[in-house]
Length: 374
Image 1: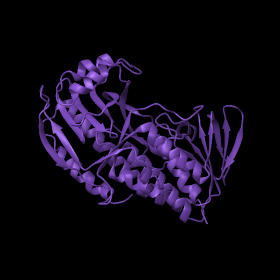
Image 2: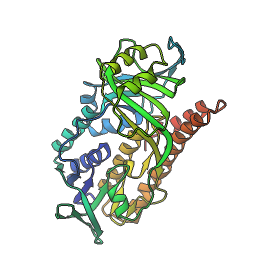
Image 3: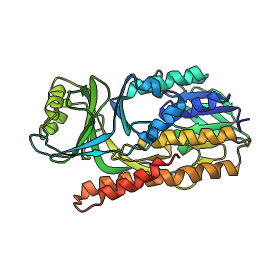
Image 4: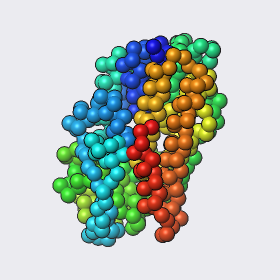
């Protein structure tokens, strides 16, 4: 019998939907409190590494995902020249095991829709327009008061509410995401036939120019630059101007940008909560507990692993006690911290123009760690 009967989850992102579904499958009554009034249809693409796919396979959504996304097992490197010359094609590590691809690209809203439907099918209640006002640990549970005055009780509360987590602040953890010094343009565009994997270009007008196929007909492209005051900027013309420095598929991408492809701009952040992620019967996971630059595309994977490990321990344990939390933190904190440090180190090397950095060594060591299930 699971250690809990009722669980509240704050946030309907990947981590929240995953932990809710795993628990609901085990007979736990789960309610997700989501502050938005309706499911989001916004977003570009997402790059999922094998260890993220391993969790999604366990969740039972992998087969549905394959109907929409794009799988590949290698990584291309291109020169920052007008031709976009391919200088290397590298085998990528299948960190989810040999039965899953190394990397999978997908349109983010489509993945969210698949995960949301899976949660609903499992019996999860998703309550939209519910923002947390305050919470109180009451010994054998948590009392949550929402902004609209509702008072809710759960055996356990999971804060999967992102970078600026209300739950994190409410339980007294004062760690906040810190800027890395980089900003990223993202665009969702048609896929040229030439794009069959992620190709990265280092140098030129940006630190990184890259793209990832997300389906037979679409992909997302991104440019990483030194952080600018462009938060919320949606001017595709600026991204098109930066893209003019790159060749190959970037010629088609640039034309799509000039034709009005949707773009967005955000800054990279990093943080990790050291030590315990819980206070009493409230716990944070995913971006609430840690964030990192997407230099190795592990943000979603870490969030999904958090969800899977937490749900597993709650299902196999017969009580919520210190032993459960010790097991959870021993399996998650060090692993997530290593990913944050590696991702941030890669970003810092680029910012510093470090030419002698041991990128292959860093990536190889991390991949060897991630091949082992969380």
